[in-house]
Image 1 (cartoon, rainbow, N blue to C red):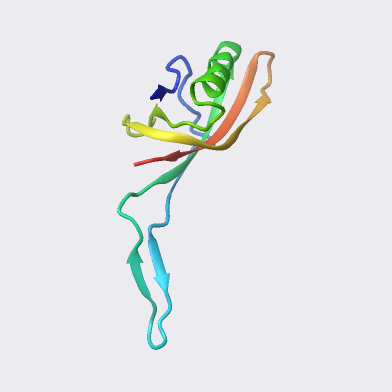
Image 2: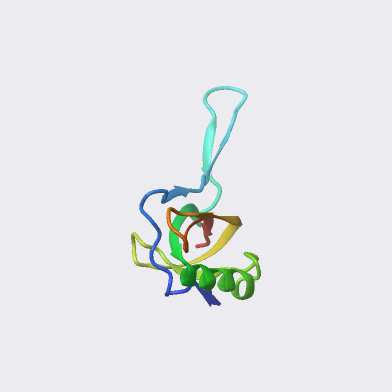
Length: 116
């Protein structure tokens, strides 16, 4: 399995969000209050990541995205910056890249889904 490039610095705190998946299903009943049940015990989450990358970090990410994970189609191992745990993840959709204040600095953001 591919591994996220260690040459890329951790994501920025600004813009980092983690949202757990909804695992409870609610259903209405004919009489009385509705019922809830657990859909799955495999709790997944989606994480929004924002990186500030230099030219060399961008080149490493672009190569990783294109070649190692087939433009986001394949899963990869990534170290969660808050827990330090290695998670199996995949990119949801694609990434966005915008120049920062000076030449050769980029803000790269994307979402990943943690696959537990």
